[in-house]
Image 1: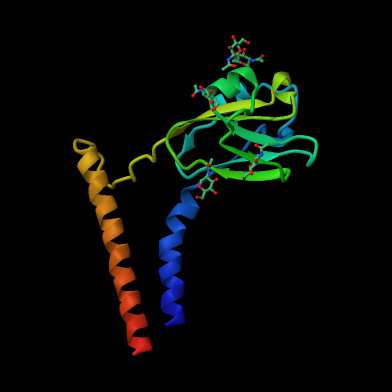
Image 2 (image 1 turned 60 degrees about the vertical axis):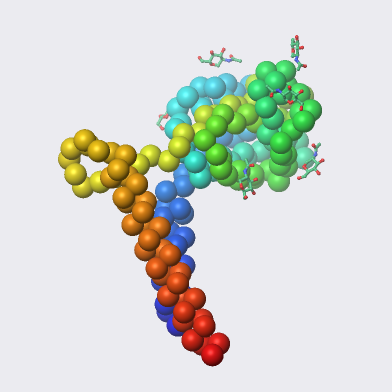
Length: 164
Ligand SMILES: *[C@@H]1O[C@H](CO)[C@@H](O)[C@H](O)[C@H]1NC(C)=O
Ligand SMILES: *[C@@H]1O[C@H](CO)[C@@H](O)[C@H](O)[C@H]1NC(C)=O
Ligand SMILES: *[C@@H]1O[C@H](CO)[C@@H](O)[C@H](O)[C@H]1NC(C)=O
Ligand SMILES: *[C@@H]1O[C@H](CO)[C@@H](O)[C@H](O)[C@H]1NC(C)=O
Ligand SMILES: *[C@@H]1O[C@H](CO)[C@@H](O)[C@H](O)[C@H]1NC(C)=O
Ligand SMILES: *[C@@H]1O[C@H](CO)[C@@H](O)[C@H](O)[C@H]1NC(C)=O
């Protein structure tokens, strides 16, 4: 039973863990004033589920998620979220443009970054021809979901069996 659960969680969690990338803002220069983060962002491709992480001196800087107005004008009014641990991992949950700024005035010194998050790419297929990429992708997704719900029902049945 324990072994089965282990494999169940391995199968359930591994695809998302393996495919999510952590994008460290500014790479080894981190989240600091005087860096053009537009250049950094242009060098990265973001997908739904990826993380963006901000590393900085705690208590000196922080991170606010704002909308385009907040980004353009360096204002945190109406911010969607804020982080201040010094090592903030933020998951990009949706395909949209995200805006992050520093909330203590350093936004005016360049501490602002905007990233566009792309939808997940279709899973790779073994076929060399891509005449029907959409249906191939949905077939893979269907099989993927089907496998998981099958395993889930199996686990539930096992639990029921144990409880009885
Ligand atoms: C950052 O680089 C981009 C692309 O080269 C440029 O358009 C932008 O003006 C630069 N921003 C600053 C604040 O220098
Ligand atoms: C873009 O990425 C490449 C490879 O990771 C790196 O060598 C280069 O310095 C990066 N450029 C910028 C502007 O971050
Ligand atoms: C943003 O700043 C510009 C000029 O700095 C100003 O004209 C505009 O009203 C500001 N927008 C908001 C929503 O505060
Ligand atoms: C951003 O949020 C502010 C405050 O909630 C709001 O006044 C402004 O219209 C918003 N701007 C955009 C582009 O949504
Ligand atoms: C930061 O976020 C918390 C909730 O996560 C909120 O209660 C707080 O008001 C926010 N701070 C600012 C300055 O917006
Ligand atoms: C994405 O979702 C997670 C968990 O639901 C949440 O903690 C995180 O703040 C979300 N990311 C953003 C940028 O809102």
